[in-house]
Length: 148
Length: 416
Image (cartoon, rainbow over all chains, first blue to last red; front, side, top):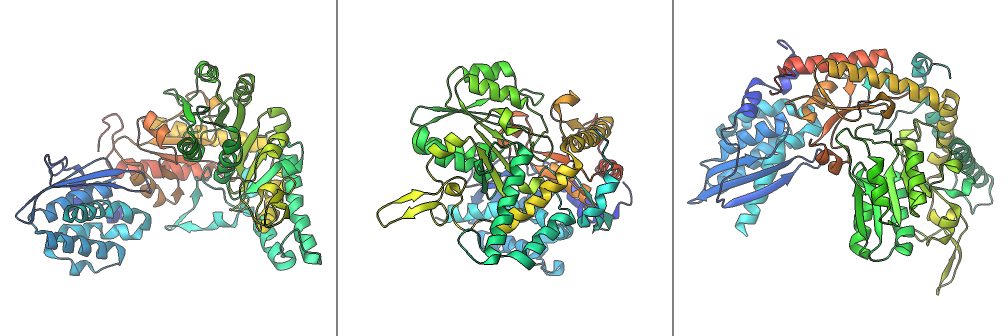
């Protein structure tokens, strides 16, 4: 609906574009990093796979089905983390989680996470924050496992 | 049976006056929990203000009063569900605990390796997981009657599964996830004829449809107070007296003993043998007020009213090309309507509805095997109760059209 300001505030156009995009949907095979995340609220599952090269995230893909918020967030995350070295990637995850979980300032987001400001409206729906952070928590698990 | 007029009851439910995101609340999540009338809220606060004391062992006035009030609720419940004796009704924390009690106290004593427990694919996780835990511990086998594509059970398949001689047949009377009304009496009869102990998960039945435990002929029946206007923290297990007598206790501690020495203990009489520790007596007393309320309205009238609203909601959904789960035959449906918006995740549906003040539940409804069978990860579910009215239906219709418009969903095209 044109002018449905409330829904637009949550589901911004950029979010819907990422949700519809299939650019980084799928799996890396072979993968250097593989992690499986479950959102306990809805049971949605997400698989994150990545190729790591020279200490950097060379390629990152997400697979699974989910809501607009979890899928768009995973797509934006894949875009933001590709090219980052692992410490930088972890710092980006921390910065995004700070935005979502600690009501962080959008203006303080690193430039790589510029698009993620579109998830700001999700914070008004505390139960949906888990959707937004699913991909990010999953990739962190992947980093932990890969390290050990 | 007189027709139910929700306008007569809505003023009793203070929460229905509140706004959600600026809109009047349309509470359609009754299968998860119902709202409470002021009579129940008042019974609870009156109890704490006037009668509160621990039950059973006190000789002072307050203890006697609280004991009597808690036990009066049990007697009221016995009349409400047609239990042969009040003491065959055990108070637990919730229906999940009731089902776990059966698995622990009956299952551990009477099931041995190789025995089969038969259930169905329609069950809530609470009627699957306790049996899986027991299976892992005791080497018993689990079998499940398959659910048909229309969300019903095929009685031929039930009979075939029962013919293999399961020791226990445990099934839901009414599906919380998709609203199928199972032929409970027939299923109990088939189970008993096959020599199985029969356990009924009546969580979604007890708040909506009359039951007469004496004539049902089941062995165990579980349900929960909070889904029937009562407070949270009160579940019920009804058991056939001779089974309850033969079972070992569930939890050990105070109240459930007859005599304790350091060497051994003997058990208290029913129902206390299964009610270890300080019981939830305040909520138990307030549950009595909920039963009074339901009795005054009448379960037949409630059932007819919510069925009518749910069928209207189904028409709205089908009119917009939405996928409605469960049986097509209205006679096999309850006050629950479970649906999916093509191309949209149930969580997005739930949030969009919330913006219209409409509370629906979304997700797998603790029925992941059923969702898997019906080939969806989850659904959005509207569930009606006695206080829902045309304004709730109107809000539901508005929320649906708003969702479809915003996400540009053209039902036949099917994708976002």
